[in-house]
Image (cartoon, rainbow, N blue to C red; front, top):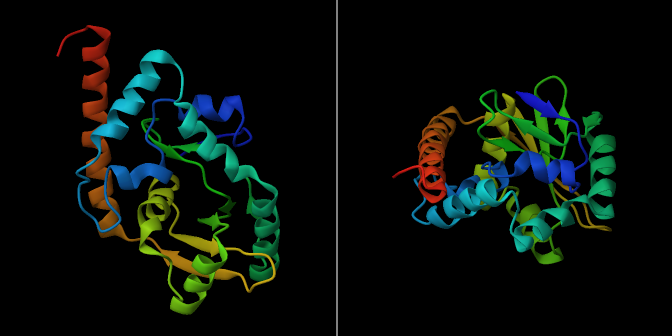
Length: 202
């Protein structure tokens, strides 16, 4: 793993992500249920366009800028207090081949991480009632473990004034093997699309 020390939401952070698949959108490549996504082409073309133009789609950028808000900082501090751990903030983590990466909400030394969601009240209560991480976050959480090599990840849902939801998620090797294969194939397609659009051949 390669850790890029930068603040999330800054130009340096966007530069690291440019044209690379990121764990927050791995579900568009390999679904949360462990299948190849049937709608990956939109993401494929988006990333190819980023590589060629050197720019990110404005809407996509704005979605990630919201992650650095004050509520997330409060949630991270509350999580640290409850679990008795220290969370290391990082910018962007790259796998060794630098083909894809993730932006965890924190790493927990020596071998863990955390994903924080500041959900609306109804969804937060749903997490507490079910006592499960919503399956819609599987690709992102397992993807974070895949990129960083971690063996566990905490999923956190936070809403001020309500009990925090914390669920430890273990590494799922079967899922990660499938995700790895899907990412390799996706990146090969991405390279091919980029070459084609640049006029280097099909």
